[in-house]
Image 1 (cartoon, helix red, strand yellow):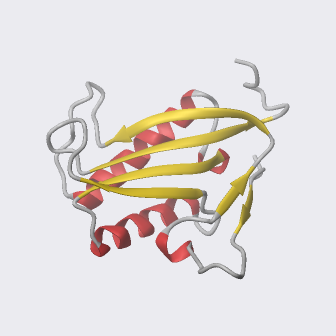
Image 2 (tube, one colour):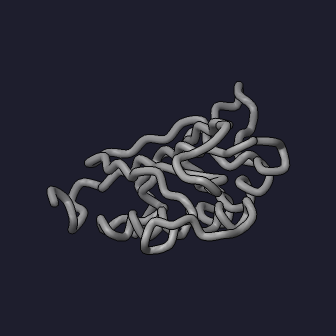
Length: 141
């Protein structure tokens, strides 16, 4: 399936792609909202691991949630990322992981540094807005 998103990074603004996002994203279709995904196992327990491992597991869970509604990373137009005790080193880790998932077609994103998340041991959480294109086989589920 082709990428139906339009991603925009105006020349008048800084290049956001090293940080793992685009300034603006749009698509035509039905919005799909994916709840915050974290480094959880199938029972909802936080999987032990450092920040990088939690980011990768969270992205795996995001991929699974998207697949559950017939979509993939190419349908995501916006991300919300939440990092406990955010610092530049964690931003670098997140940027690499996002490039691994989206290459150079990065969705828009807002990153929030937070003191804590819902469960003990959670270091990262990510939510998403995707767009199911008109005519997609899973439209009007």
